[in-house]
Image (cartoon, rainbow, N blue to C red; front, side, top):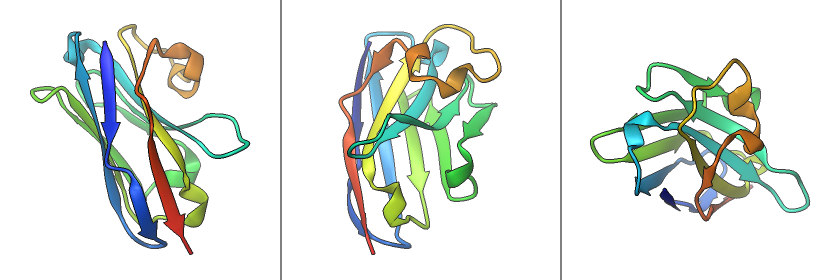
Length: 126
């Protein structure tokens, strides 16, 4: 499975970006999808995840009510709509995929995902 993330860039605080992650080489509709981010000098952290059908979504507290994860299984793509961006959101954003069912809390751990995209830089200026 190959994942290609795109949509990052430079935006002012309060602005919006939409990240996309296109998947190929697998049955996309059977993959749990996650978004993680990593700021310089910090560990990779969970941002959001979405179940196979899109019926369940999960967010870290710091992005709730600002970010929305969604997927289009017909297009093999997962999205992360980011609104009201803050300088603390600055990081490289990665999409990740795993075909296994996720138990409660599994989606939080980077080690739970088998496949990763290359990352896209998001920079939020103050």
